[in-house]
Image 1 (cartoon, helix red, strand yellow):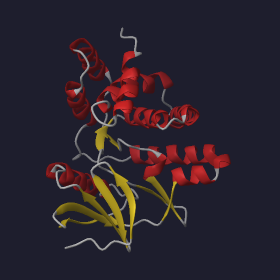
Image 2: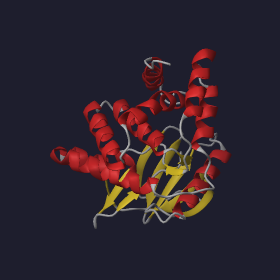
Image 3: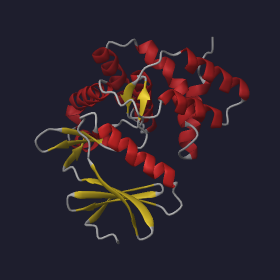
Image 4: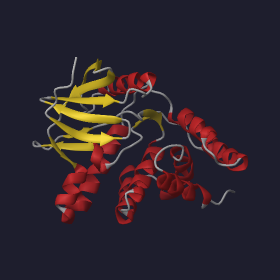
Length: 251
């Protein structure tokens, strides 16, 4: 089977996303881990079962010798595009972002991998010194355990609002079950990484208010999340995330 797609939607590191009518085709590079691709498809199928609005998986196949995941195409604009088009409504869109995230956190998907296990593994793989890794593992172990559905890359570009104002959440490759505040800490850091510090602070304020969570509690997750994310990405991103780990005052 070959790719006959209408247009390229996105080009990311090691994958290309095409639109083909009412389908989206995510094609992975030939050297991409088959296990990771199948796990991403399985994550998405597990999340579908929660009843959340997400694109349904149609098939997992090979196209021109490369693995591909084919999902439903959701027509609409991302929250990111909406924020850029109408910056005066940004706070309103940030509220919507938080509301969608909290609805997601209200779901459970007990067969997904655990966020805590993934973070422990990533911290072990990081190039922090042994003392810092020990502190991070200890800090992670002391955090309350939870089993909420977490996205792992929850940001405005992964939310599509349809013409009839229904929100869909895209990209479930990092989905886990775990602590909602860890997921929120990741979103906060993503705003920082994009250079939008005012949105990061507004997001944090809204998340804590709407979820009745202490800001200090989400902040306690920041070094753990930053460390576990620092094992991938571009060198400047890694450096930025490392700075979040290093500013922490260990007790």
